[in-house]
Every structure is written in C-alpha cells, then in structure tokens.
Image (tube, rainbow, N blue to C red; front, side, top):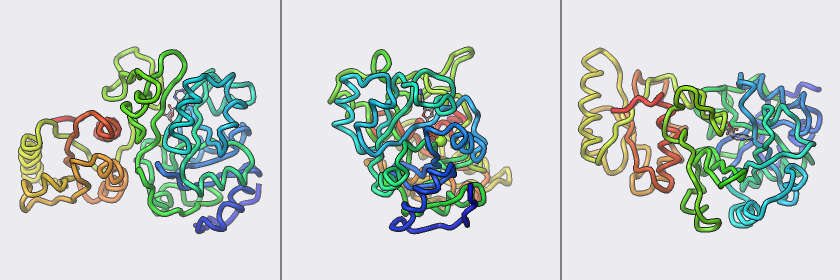
Length: 343
Ligand code: AMP
Ligand code: MG
C-alpha cells in the first residue's frame, strides 16, 4: 500500500482520496457525529488488523461496521429482525449501533471471534460520503490510542494518530462528543453502551429495553462483558479523575473539600464546573464544561475537556449527573475515566 503524506484535509476533497486509501487496505481517520473514527475496509482482515496495531487495541475488543445504506444490513447479518428494521427507520442515519448475528462475509477480526457484529449508519455527511467512495463497509473504532479519551477534534486525533494512519479528514468538532449507543437485538433488546439515542427514545419505538449491568458498574469477579469494550480501563486522561455524587450543593461542597485537601498536598487540582455550580467554587481553578439542565452539553465537552486539560492538572474533580436520558451516557464515560473513583 502506498504511504500517503499524513495530511489533514478538508472534507470536500478528503473523501475521494480517503475512499481510495480504504480500498487499497490503508487507514483513514474520519469525522462522525459521535467521535472521530479510525477506519479500514471492514471486509478485509489484513486492513482490519491495521486498526488494532495503530490503536494498540486488545484483539478481543470487536469493531463497529459503518454503512451508508440501510439495505447493507442484510449482507452483514444472518437476517434483519423486525425490531432492528424499526430502529433503523427511527434513528438512522444517527448515533445508534445495533448488534445482531453476523453473516459469513464478516471477517473474524472485526467481531473478535463473536458470532455477532455491530453495525451503524452514521449521520455525519462526510462519514457517509467516505463510505460511499470506499464502496465497502468501514470498520472503525474511535481514533484514539487504546485507553485514552476518544477524540472529538482533528487536533486531538493528531496527538494520538500522527504517523500511524494514511489520512486524517478534518470535519471540525463532533456534534455529540461521545460514542454511539450500542444496543443488542440478540434476545431481549439491551443497551450495552449508552449514548445520544437514549433508553427512553428506544423504548418509545420498540418497548422495554434493558441496560447491561456493566454500564454503570465495574465488572464483577468472573462476569463476562456483553460488550467486550466494557472490561477495559477506558477514557483515562493523564490526570487522576474523581467524581462527586449527591445533590448539586452536596457535590459542590465535596469538590471544594477535596480541592483544598489536594492543594494542601502540593497537587494542582482542576474542577470541571457547570453553569449552575460555578459560583460555589469561588476562586478555585475551574473550567465550565456545560449546563447541568442540558446533559447533552456536558456529553459534548467531556472527552474534549479530559484531553484538553488532562495534562494541565494532577487531579480533575468532576460532578455526577442523574442517570436518566443523556445523563446515563455521561456517567458511563465519566465513571470509567475516573476508574470508579467516587466521593
Ligand atoms: P469503539 O469502536 O471504540 O466505539 O468500540 C466499539 C464498542 O462496541 C466496544 O465497546 C465493543 O465492545 C462494542 N461492540 C462491537 N461489536 C460488538 C459485538 N458484536 N457485541 C457486543 N459489543 C460489541
Ligand atoms: Mg473507543
């Protein structure tokens, strides 16, 4: 495969070049509405192995196949269950990934040997244009080194992937800032990873949806993860992360106390404040990362802020949100970035 210059291109002309690179077996980073993806030809085992090498990703963590037309589903799955069709019609293109029994054209490297495969039709136009140009499903995990927070800007991609991929397509900041909702349709519908398509939104369309235990808890001894990605330390910035739980006032009081203790130990703490709580922190170091009454704003800036400020503090003190709607996706990522370090 030709080594291309590691150029960052604007999306207008990036997708034609990107499509060619994918067809030739190379790696292309592209924007989606969730986070940036690290893509390769999803039907080519060798190309897919390149993704695992570039990220340092454990081989038993499967990838999502990205398609540009709903009709592709029936090529990738053994068949398309009614509920999947209903969800596709309701939420595609968009930040929803569905897991079901795979067909024989899907390589083992994509599914990490599982008999199921995850598929998504992204909402981002550049992503869809790239998939169309490539003419194949694109296997893509988030474009970060394994264990780091997912990148939501091309600059954050560059920090991890410069020199490891053939092309980075710059599509500006990602709209949602967190990875897609992953829902399994093998058996009772279950959320394996929460995202911008919430439990409430899914249930309005297909009825009851379970939430996998590992979404808000570390795996129990001997428990196997329904979604293999759940078992790894995830989204960890350079700094330690501590999460404060309780009412708004309790959270603020806990954070102020922890801040002062850490400072007296000679550490540099930084508070991820919100519009509502910022006044409580007075002259302590803080950045406002969103509005507690609109969890989507916190979701959109969590990974960005972890990457941006993670190297400028010893400890980040962050606020818990209630676990409903997009608060569930927020807490799933925040608790993992904190290694479940809760006060
Ligand atoms: P990433 O691409 O980094 O967003 O990670 C993809 C996520 O989807 C990981 O958490 C995987 O464990 C999950 N995933 C992908 N394929 C499957 C599958 N066949 N069954 C269950 N989870 C999956
Ligand atoms: Mg990831």
